[in-house]
Length: 213
Image 1 (spheres, rainbow, N blue to C red):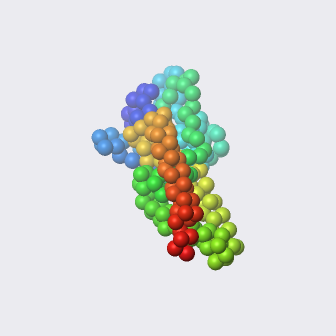
Image 2 (cartoon, helix red, strand yellow; image 1 turned 180 degrees about the vertical axis):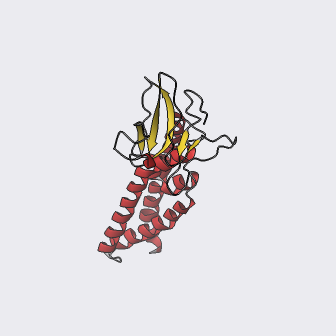
Image 3 (cartoon, rainbow, N blue to C red; image 1 turned 45 degrees about the horizontal axis):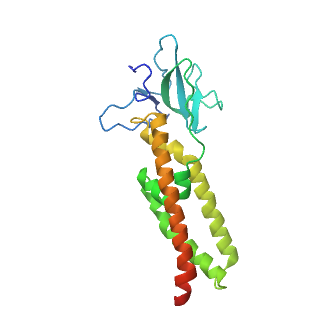
């Protein structure tokens, strides 16, 4: 099982007990090497070490001799991508929250292959109608509050798990630094779009919609 020294672009990937890989084949057809259940990565030269991306921690961690997560004490089944680093190279870090996914899940999801997140568009329209009706005495306040809290809770959860999914999808083609650089650009774009959506919805409900009510 070969691996280039110091190359983040050639990660080792583990296979779960169900046989499913988390590695995506790159467009060039050069995915990382695969480690099956119970297998250990190849020995490294002096001065090198393995670190891994733990799905349970949603971040990178130092690895034990059995490829287990040393950060949270999780088993090797949670470690899905293994990178080779120099002995003194800092451990990569994956932010806990993806702001692009938090502010615009309806766009972040499809851009990252989760097309079902388009359903946020009709959900937002439904919430807008609920809030508008409640403000104008035509809705059920309790239902509106519950719907808003459930939507907010799921959106926050999605933002907290987005980097884990997004990096796993890009690990074959991008280093952690390259992935995060791309995500920062998406975050700027999606936050601006979220502000525009909010401004438009506010203007429509205050200036246009009452005229047709």
